[in-house]
Length: 433
Image 1 (tube, one colour):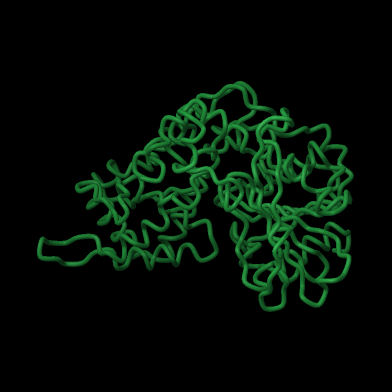
Image 2 (spheres, helix red, strand yellow; image 1 turned 135 degrees about the vertical axis):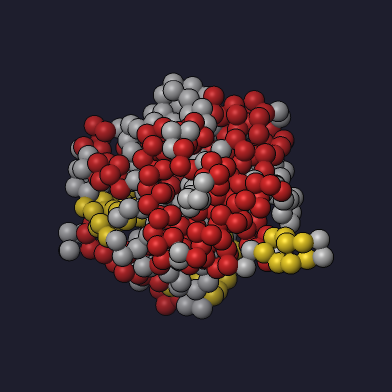
């Protein structure tokens, strides 16, 4: 039984489902999934087609909209929408430092989390689809990692899809995590250069903060250990439409004078902590690199290893000279678990996932080449999070896929561009554009 309630212009219903933890052992342990059904108030009694939304991440629950915000308003013109919290996120059997010890030690936790990737998420969707649609196929909108899931969906269960829409989330089909990060660091460097070109005063500000952090390694509010590498990772903001501006405003008031001398301001600490902490989405840190893993080759802390090939990101060496400190972003490192109290108890679990060598293959090029599902994808030019060259290469392997390539938006274009982006993708998928 679902609980229904209203917001401006919409009717919402809470839906809960029980699915196998391991779909290869359907009679074994189960977990609970949560999804929020949304329908326009004036169409609540109509028999509408369904669109399921797969959030980016991994590790984030579906958006908590109020009314018809962002792309949702356009979707509700013709769909009944299911905002799914993917397993381990939001209200779907959350996986975090509080719950994972129930599984046992690090080995048991790692084995459990290996079942929280795109392959399991898609099988969850197929398990609940009959209860939601009566067995009819549904449309899917996959943002970022949700696009990875959608590509897997097209590879393994296309019969469940009426339409597939992807925003900033076409994955490399066979590239290792190392390939992903080798492409990522130069891309991030370009984003940093663009930021400093816009806000040249931030060059000295970032150097001053980095030097202070390197010498003092302060502990932020909440117990987060701010190392210089952690400070650099604030560059994750640069992949969003407003990120450069937000980073600038964060840096401009970093210091205050105190009775003990200059210190990082409480305001800076609070905002920096909100960007750096994984307390609200620990699964992102735990399985981020595992999203790329296929076959027997371990990820082996790929982002950390590959970073050594780009010495310009070494802040200590930069501070010994007079160059700009480079920010980073969209990567998880062993030190991430040492810095963040929300992750610290899970460090050994993360190490075990990084060593794992039995990952299922996620994509089927032959099946994608024979695709018959209408599919359209937004590809953001020089997307900081998903490599454009990788995305376009994959787009060319999926039969019938039509791309909307744009430099108008950053990675969060489906939020910033909202109705326009979704309208464009629907028109492409229907061969109307």
